[in-house]
Length: 496
Ligand SMILES: Nc1ncnc2c1ncn2[C@@H]1O[C@H](COP(=O)(O)OP(=O)(O)OP(=O)(O)O)[C@@H](O)[C@H]1O
Ligand SMILES: [Mg+2]
Image 1 (cartoon, rainbow, N blue to C red):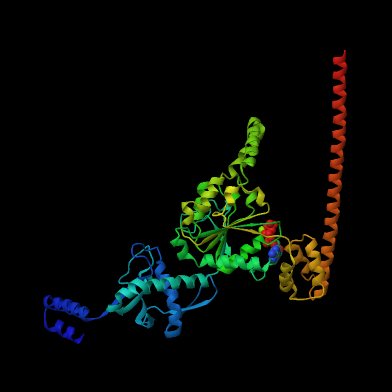
Image 2 (cartoon, rainbow, N blue to C red):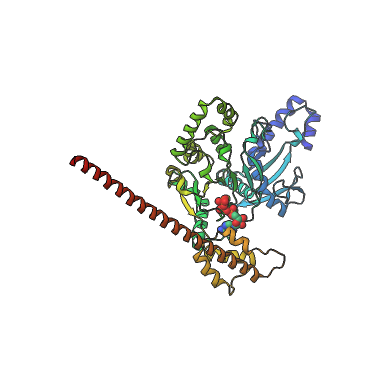
């Protein structure tokens, strides 16, 4: 520096400038380190935050909180946790080691050069990270280390974020956009459901099978790629109301740390909107369509025909037609083929790592095309509460693993059909401090009551069947008599 000042003092500008230039080049030639800069905003778009900057920031947070002396604290909007990051422009470096290569990270800010008016982020806001390493590691850093940093950063983001529950509804139409003018398709809330597979009451072996299937799916990115299959899986959950279908979806999301998209099909205008909704979902998510049998035309052609006939009738009547005009606009035009396309069309592969779940109370009503293997890979029946499921509920609700009444309950559960929801309701203490035996007794009484009702129902059904049979027989006798009397008539006639 001193040499430069002396040069400037003694020699004219025309001579000093090239000397400076070439000495810098010479220094660069012998300087054996490379520095890569990662700006916060995309180079060609001042409004677009760089995703790599965010990933690097997360990756560095762990290194910084252990090494740096100047830290910046902030509260992450999604997690409520205090995050410590390297303070920008603190001229501090944090070191990292990868495959025995030493690297140094630092953060900085571009200082505003002059007072300028800008529509993008202020120049002072233009932060960046710099990575410095020896020139001989160029290939390893560019090929592997950077990939490692970005992947780790993304993983940390998934781990730390609060998961979301997204819903679509017609109210969203024309609403404020998340990205300037773009219409928001999904509205979101924090997903905070406490259900886990541990608290889900069902046969333990079946439960283990589902957990294994899910974890295997989430870890099989490379496998799906190698067999040329889109990285997604379909589950059909069916069974009577209150058997835990929705609870299982929450448990799935909690197990895999996925977001949940609760898709209300009847609120989707048409196939195009359905596709747009799909494209707007992120990976690591479960897309749920509850009560699929109640949604649209998926129950096959029969209902569609009935609907068409009804529509024709209404169109003939001008009064009815007028009344229907307002309503019709709201009716969804999503078709079965649109839905099939949603599940396994070309668009469904965008993003990957998605689980699609359908639930229904009436599996037999569904169009076979919708639930064939490959679309819905796993069909899971959730049924009435068995003894093993009851034990899980007893542990959850009463913290009981054994009790004298368990034998009687086992017997009763074998003979009756009670949903886990009803069993849970009976087990739940009704007043604070209610004793556990009292809760179990309430369940026993409820089971006995259900058993009696079922017996009465069966008796009634048998009686009705008997009555029907009797009627059939009587009708048969009457018809026979009529036939023989008419034959008699013919004989008489012929005889005449
Ligand atoms: N298998 C289960 N394990 C634990 N709790 C259950 C189970 N089944 C039902 N429950 C309890 O009953 C309530 C209702 O269950 P859930 O909403 O999951 O039933 P569902 O099968 O989705 O019913 P629907 O067909 O009416 O949607 C839940 O709040 C849950 O606490
Ligand atoms: Mg449900």
